[in-house]
Image (cartoon, rainbow, N blue to C red; front, top):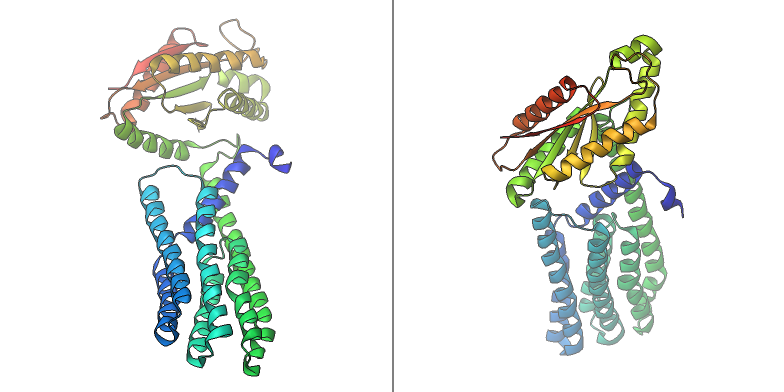
Length: 378
């Protein structure tokens, strides 16, 4: 139930950490290929020495699981490079299922080699490959420790069972050693995971601080510019229009002169909160642009929709009823003026859109403030 009471910023931070951990899972395929080949060679050797067709079939199945996972990694990286959205949870589940499939296959191969082959060379190859694989996955898959735990149990417990049925007292040492190995590798995976979480959390907090306005705790001008650059790139790819709103608090100098700068800071904070509450869509970004100016990015929004949203924001600030007794137009509450610019051209640049919104804002202030004026970027 705690998930219901966390803020949007915390939700985004949790998502960013999950995304980074998922990227780590899907980082490289070289060691996966080596693990898959080692398991496959164990099956081939078992078939060549004892004509164990079942062991070979299981080894091939394990290799196919690895191959599917490698293909998934390539698809994941391609989607990431294209900037496409995806659900980290679903990709982690895909990774976990293929990893569990290959681990079960390696466990079955090891059990058969130990319990039935009576070939010491084959048993040694199988045990060494599986224990080495366990160490590799404890480090590589530490981004998802639960996957590691299931993999270790699926691949190493069969070694312990196979050693018990091997009929050779020399292998009974494995019955005692494997549980300690499993526990040690789980501890390693959990410790690496904890270090990753601490590292990513620190990085995300630093990024958040660099992108957040200290006073209002909303995105700052720097972050707004980055979002606009992304929107321009998406505009050129999808031809979906977007709108930028430039917002200025009316007669804010008079507010500060009458009530003082601390009250002015509180006023800006209330306006920022009101703007955010009025724009809950994930396709919008509200930021403090500087001083008493705010800027809003409305993705996938044409001129008509942008005008409606801008008027809604204007009305929302007026409805807040923040007292302002030092205005020159006779009103006694804080209001805002809004200039909006929409781009319908894939060739429009960031500066031209901002300039068009600024000019529209100037017209809104010239015409009496507490109103919306529209502009169109070239």
